[in-house]
Length: 343
Image 1 (spheres, rainbow, N blue to C red):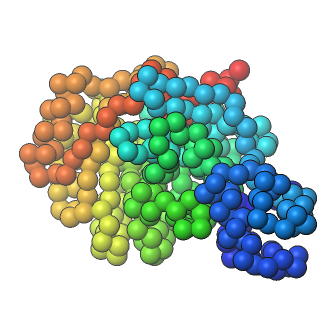
Image 2 (cartoon, rainbow, N blue to C red):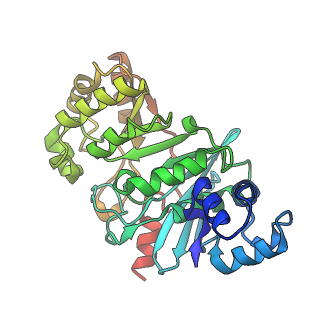
């Protein structure tokens, strides 16, 4: 059976018309699924009984199963889901004052093999469908313990811009008043720097946030850390970023994981300032590395982290330091999935 979440509102309206039902029921179905979190057609009480039966025979709603949960002392919760083909993906609920952020996966595994990330260690299997992506959001929405789900970041397993069409289809439902009704500026796509995807995104007329995994200030060190840099080197990536901000007038956040003895010294700081100082709409988000013993990755000392942040700030760079969350669980992307894949 087809996952009904694969259908946009217009596609669902067309489907209803094809089976002889009024198309206005599509908005009612969207409301039950995305706003009320109902997974059974039989509970959609304001739909005609015969339509509920037809829908139940033709469609499914929720297509994932909870496999494991890890909850941090700071209330960050990581969920491991099993999909219909027994693949695993992760999603994370991150509560804060008056908000809950859902961190969503877009692929089963990842092709891009960034050295600091466990997502690719079990290999790339496939893209997620829009319906599977929305499954993650539905689950987090219905299992946010402190407040409603308010923000979505595509920073989980996989590269969102490598699964462009399905991710954008999911985003339009997340953003739609008939869907989750989460504002565009509360939705963030994080990419390792897929230039054709960034160029497409600039044409979408969506006010979503764009975050780029930078993590090193020169081609040599970035290629060592992120093999994608060999295909899309920094000069071309930064040029693309200039074009993106000129087209959209939207700020780009550059994620920069601070890794001990690799990219957190004074030389790296000077190079990073030189790389970004002329990019008007740019912010650097510094992230102390999650310790990954298998990859010999560890964060710098707190003193080194603060020095690096102050160096950027005093050089005119808009910089923030991400608060560390989930440090007492498998915090890095893909670690929980990897543990289960290796069983």
